[in-house]
Amino acid sequence: MRQIITQVDAFTEKPFAGNPAAVCVLAAPQSDEWMQNVAQEMNLSETAFLLKQDDGFNLRWFTPTVEVPLCGHATLASSHVLWSEGHLSPDETARFYTKSGLLIAKRQGEWIELDFPVIHSQATVAPPGLSEALGVPLKSIVQNYLGYLVEVASEDLVRQMQPNFQQMKTLPMANVIVTSLANSDSQYDFVSRFFAPGLGINEDPVTGAAHCCLASFWRDRLNKDQFLAYQASSRGGVVKVTYTGGDSLQPAIGHRVLLAGQAVTVLRGELISQ
Image 1 (cartoon, rainbow, N blue to C red):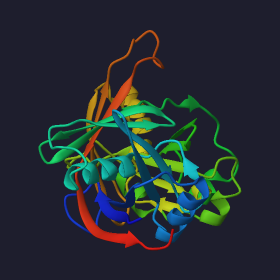
Image 2: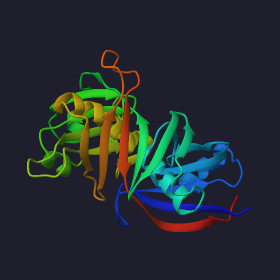
Image 3: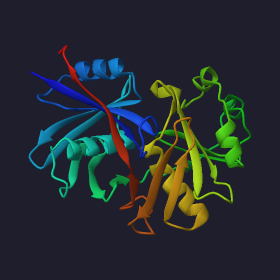
């Protein structure tokens, strides 16, 4: 049985930028072992596997080493493939059943908008060695299930930092989002980078899930709900972020993040070993 695999650059309008993801719209169910092996073979930060359901698609995401519960750029890439390859008509909504619940994607002109859950963070104390591993002084720190979320003093620090990934692996949590306000002359509201040696990825080029954390982080500090964000990896990527919904008296209930990005197909092939 033919199994097509497509590589898409997500959160970018041009090839060879943004975050690459492989997407398999499965012709038949496959084992967890097979999917992990394919993800390892592709050696991208994420490989997405979709299986058609009655009213949507089951969606799972694998790094080269582990399955993860939420991934923004591979969901964006999956949505792009469903529309561009004719699995959905242009006016249809993409519905994904995942380990993080039901996720929705819609086309908005040249952009794709993802409806994701907010990831709330809690106050914490920086563990010994974190600042040294990142190589920068810390302005503030919180944590969530993705890892630590660290604010630093400037965009220049975010762009220039060169973490010690081996030292990061010795921390209680080996994944760190680093962020700051964008420079005053920038079109962006904030910038970030995401280092994830704990997931087998030293640096993820553009991370949707990280912006599910950054949305609430910067909403609290800037008192606004809409942002234009830039993830300042070497490939770089742009994310439109909207914090929406929820009860202000119960901040963990009902809040969502709308993440919008663009995507472009760069490679299409056939897996010949099943």
